[in-house]
Length: 122
Image 1 (tube, one colour):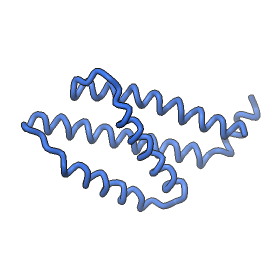
Image 2 (cartoon, helix red, strand yellow):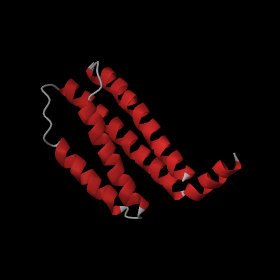
Image 3 (cartoon, rainbow, N blue to C red):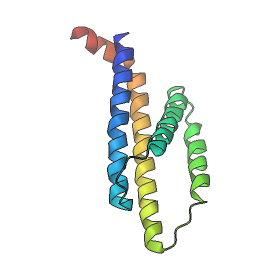
Image 4 (cartoon, rainbow, N blue to C red):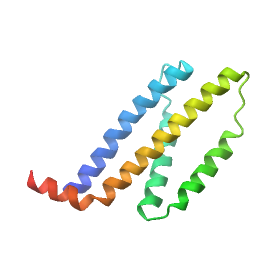
């Protein structure tokens, strides 16, 4: 029970931090000044998709996820090359960070028994 609460708390805390981090990245690349909750929710859903499949040893989900992301990216249209580079950088950084966080969640889930042991010692 305590490990479940720990994992849920860790995920909630990291998702809040990620929301602010992605907002800061958007400010750097796009000068956006507010948090886009739609994008935050979409990122959370993407990470949970990856966690679900990677936790169950279905690594081909990464390929499927990449194909989906590429398909949505192909529709993006920027007016100038500079804007396109900014979007590509923002897109790459955001996706790498998002997949890294999903892999971290899977690591935590795979090591729950160790977390339970540590929490029982406290």
